[in-house]
Amino acid sequence: MPSVSRDFAESVYRIVCMVPEGQVTTYAQVGTYLGSPRLARPVGNALRQLSRARARDVPWQRVIKSDGTVAVRGDYTRAPRQVRMLRTEGVAVDEKWRVPLEIHGWRGPNKVPAVEAFPAPPMARARAGRRSKND
DNA sequence: TTGTTGACTCCCG
DNA sequence: CCGGGAGCCAACA
Image (cartoon, rainbow, N blue to C red; front, top):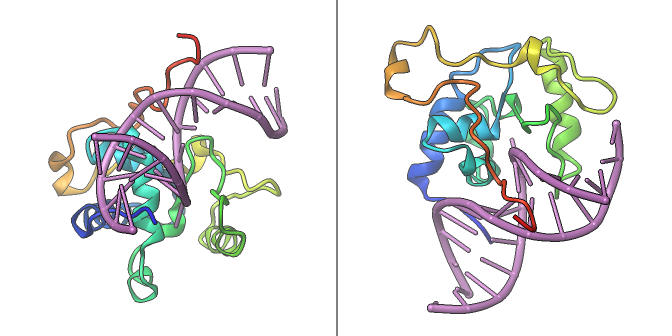
C-alpha cells in the first residue's frame, strides 16, 4: 500500500490550494514545485490519501495528468465526479475527459506572495519518466 | 535489502 | 490517436 509522509502530503495540499477555480494543474507540475516533476506519482498518492474532511478544503479536482486528461486508473468512481466538479467551476472537459491546458492550465502562483518559496518555473517540465528501452 | 504498488510520465511502434 | 512498456519515487512488508 504505497503512501507518502504526512509532511510531503501537506506540502502537496498547500500547493494545490493555490490553484484558482476555473484552472487546473498537473501532478508533474505540482511535483516540480516540490523539487522535481518525477514526484508526480507521490503527488498522486498524496491526493489519494486525502481524508474526506480535508478534501473539503483542498481543490484536489483541479489536478489532472500531464497529457491533459483526468486520471482514472484504479478508481472509476472518483473520476466522473471530478469531471462534474470541474465543469461546475467552468473548466471545459470534453467527452474524453480532456481539458485544454492552453486555456485552463494554471500558470503558477504568480500573484501569490509566497511564490518565492518555489524555485522551479511553471511549465518547465523537465523530462520525467524518460529513458528509452534500448537507450 | 528486495519486491510491490499507485489519482504519473515518456517513448515507441 | 492508441496501447504497451519501462523509468521514477516514496513507503511498507
